[in-house]
Image 1 (tube, rainbow over the protein chains, first blue to last red):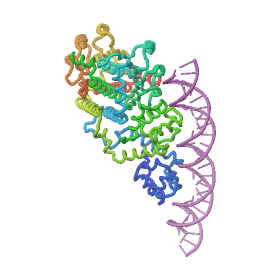
Image 2: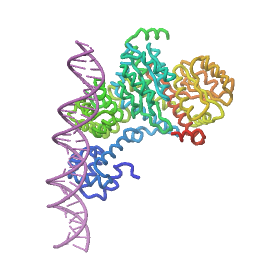
Image 3: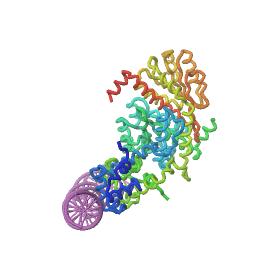
Image 4: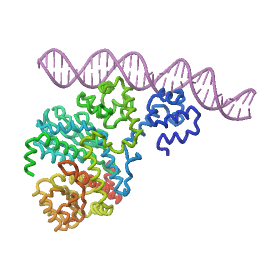
Length: 275
Length: 275
DNA sequence: CAAAATACGTAACATACGGTACAGCGCTCC
DNA sequence: GGAGCGCTGTACCGTATGTTACGTATTTTG
């Protein structure tokens, strides 16, 4: 089984005519970017004509050029999403049986933060630290503990922080308390829960600003969310991992705390005097 | 100066209308691959119409879609050519406040697992997968969400899993249900809670086997615990981090699940047939 | 050396892709 | 409550792109 297109090429490059070989070498030289451009650009870079390029990809077994490009993109996607397979990352010497899980988790965190800009985090921190409205937190079946964890911390450093728990009918009624100045922090990863989506939709209609923690496939709630944090969840286990989101949560908690300290709010001063 | 398109997006995402923001979030979530596909595919993935995508790239300052794609490709080229720079988030000169937090967290996890032997984990897994008794879980002020998270998973793959929540008086009375064959999983990090220590002590007297998740300074509960997992918690923040413990929890959940699958318990077979 | 087969490029073609005009809708602000 | 503005999607258009047919060049083989 041939895994990458690059291997496929080097397998068959010997059997190719001159023109196609030039195409192959050009592609390998700056793999895989030339292949993502148009046939015309590819052909120009290789110094051959467009049909030669097309014959080249046909020889590789692709029906047409777009199909070839899709394959390249899929390959790229796989590379970008599992940095573990990339040469870097110290193979960590004593990596043992538990390690696959740990390694995957560490990768997830690095990837999650790589897709997260400082600006984005700063915006969310500003919103959470802005105390003109209330903050509500809620999560799904497996993620509600994250909501609780965040609520437990935020509720200490600022007033008007509420975790929405218990029966659906209970927290649904809390919508009455929510308005434009309020923030709703929702955790929702696969499989996404209808009840949460409906809840988010209604909250959105009431003008509540939504901060969504979800996985890389984005919960439908992203549609209504003002801020979306997409965490990586794939690990070698029967379950998805929420660890990356957990770290983002802790980061935010820390940042909000620092922000409020900087603001020198009365509450923080009182807290400090209590310690 | 804006270096990457991702930054450019997060800079302006605040000023965008809903539809375009959705496009932006979708792009960021699986950056940059969606952007290399056609407008039609991009729009479908984001759940908006094609013109919205085009308006989105126009707002980013690109004359047209191909120009936008070229920019993405150039960026990718730069990344792929210097894989060294991607190791982790480069210490990047202006490296924000988030990086130290992430780095410290990653270190904590490595350290935590370094001090954790396979044998130790295997023993705990065996104990949790042994279904002759009941499993109770409880945590402290900040760690109870971890107990809930673990309970939410374990309760699916096996019966007799109970999270102890609510008022202290409530769960204290549950001691009556606990006996020699049962397991009590306790989470307790600084500052250790007296109520939990007393609870653990009593449970221990009743012959309950205690699995303790604590920090590196060890909760006094360690005195009664059969198994102790000490996680690193130090991070550059006003709060301690439970992230390392969280990862241990996920690792255990995965391992117990695998164990039960291997045992081929009736419940697991039924669960699988339900999926 | 001749003849055939293969390879390659030019040019014409059709498709599907990006782009635009326009109308409907919701929202905000008088 | 009404008027204006801005956002969004539908429908259509022009064109750049991938594709194919064909003629020429080049290599191969008897």
